[in-house]
Every structure is written in C-alpha cells, then in structure tokens.
Image (cartoon, rainbow, N blue to C red; front, side, top):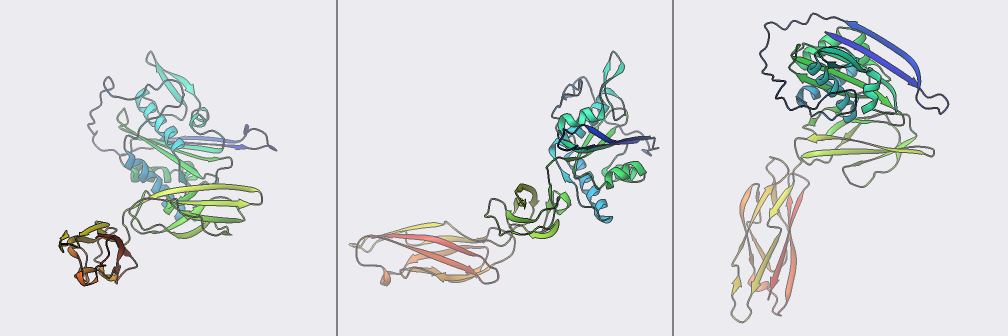
Length: 388
C-alpha cells in the first residue's frame, strides 16, 4: 500500500512563504505480496516509545538506521540514472518521516493526514503540511511518499517507482533534501515514509550521492544553486583558493580513516553562504609511524655509564595495511640506528648512543631522527634528547 502528496509554495516579492502553488494528492492501493505473515513480537503495553499525541515535533530514534540509509542511497542512485542531482539527507526531514511511520503503526492507520486514536476512534491531529513544517520550517517545497507492508528497502523502492505519483516525487527536480522513516510492527508489520523538501536560502552540498561510507578518498560532490565562485576545504583545514563555481565535480578527501568533511564557501556578489557534508572513509592512506615519539638518554661523563643502553622503536604503517619500506633519512651524529632500513611492521629498531660522537661538555643535547618511506610519500620523526 502506498500514497503520495506534494506541496509547493512561492515567495511573493519578499512575502512570507504562504502562497500555495500546487497541492496534488493521490492514493493508490498496492497489493503487496508478503507471503505468510511474519511473526514479530510486539507488546504495545511495554514498548518504550514516545507518546504520539497531536503533531508537536518529537524526536524518535531510528528503528532500523540501515534500512533508512538504504532508501536514501537507492533514491539517489535512481535520480542519477535519469540525470537528476542527489538529494541531501537532513535530520529534520528524517525526524518528520520517522514520527509519521511510528504514529501510523501505533495508532493503526495509513494516511498522509496524522491521526490520534481516541476511545478507539481515529481523530484528525493535523495535516501533512502542518506535521512536516513542524520539523522542517521555512520550506519552499515539501512532499511525502508512504508505504506499508514491504519487507525491505529494495521492495518498497520498487513499489514506489512502479507508481507514477510516487516516482514523480522521487524524481522531482525542485526537491533538494530528503528524510526517511521506518517503523516495524503493527497491522502491516513495516511502515515506510519518505519526506522531501527544499528550504529558503539553503544550498546543500552532497558527497558521493549521500552514501554513508566510501572506501576511496576520491568522491563526487554536488552543490545546489547558481553561484559565481567557490572555495573548498577538507575537515578543519585551510580554505583553498577561490575558483569558478561548479555544481558537480570530483574531490579528494583527506585520506585518513574516519568521518571526513567537505565544506564549500559560495559567493555571488554580496551574497555568501557555507555548505558542508560528511562521509565515513573506511580506509586510510599510508602513514609511517615510529613509537615512542620521544626518546631520552642519560650519559654519565665521569663513569662512562649510559641509561638506557639502547631504546627500541616500533615502526608501523598507522594509516593502512600497506607494507611500507623505510630507511633512515636524517639522524643526530651521536645516534646509532640499527637497522637503518626495513619494512613495516618492524617491532624492534634499536637506538643507541655512538660514543665517539657524543659531545664532551656537560649539557642537554637534542636531535631529530627522521625515517622516510621509499614506496609512499610519508615520513616519521622521533625526538631524541641526551643528558650529559
């Protein structure tokens, strides 16, 4: 079972966004093949969920975050296949969609209008528009697809795409943002909601079609709007130089495993804005590491004793699984490194004092040991201090 709806609004010479341009609604019953009923243990009396009453915005945690993310990715894959730019996933639309999915399940109804169940009867709580804008204000366009009974993200996407109205919402060029909600249980076992939108003066930046993860640092970037120039940066690094604006381009993330961010500063005349997006990078580039990063020696001039006799270093690739070949680049003249080259991981590089080169005057002497990788562009340094 699926339904769709779309609202549009126009700014009338700086007026508040109140003028309704279009309101189209369509309901379609879809025979969802679900086979034998699935047994899902669900106890409404003990389930820990918010009370859904009226349409006041309530934060609902995801019931299945992976399902919701898969829907977003499949929407953008489809849009790419027809030449449409990707939608940016935003938390406010996620919350609006998730609220409605859970509310339909809990109050046992299926509709765009939000209801409360009072004494066993459904009572209108608010319209689709009122509900969404409670989470997502200052909108130019909003839309919604709902479905129930589909078991997986792929199945519900196929159902929506087979329906002209739902497909139109998914493909609609005026939508720039998306949120997805999913709830399990209830009469239909699975409830799905897509909320679409576009906000005034918001120009989303989208990395890699809004996929949650990437294994490569080279990604696609799309930025909405029509600007004269832009400049970009990775994470909290320095801004790059200003360049002519482009909606779509390829970008290289900092090759460090973890959550990476790309930001763009956009400018046209006196108008400027900044837009960012994040993605998890599941791999890292080669990073030669030598630990510990600080080694201290003590040499007693009167007795010739030294502490310690030698100090071990662990040389590894801290960024990836690639084996790095390394060699000593620079070293204090009074330091001996054994061996002077090797491959990672090397657990026992020995540092010791070269007695013939140790200064004769008492004092504190510092130097830096530098190891260079010969098969990658990365180095490691160790600070060495000797007390005489």
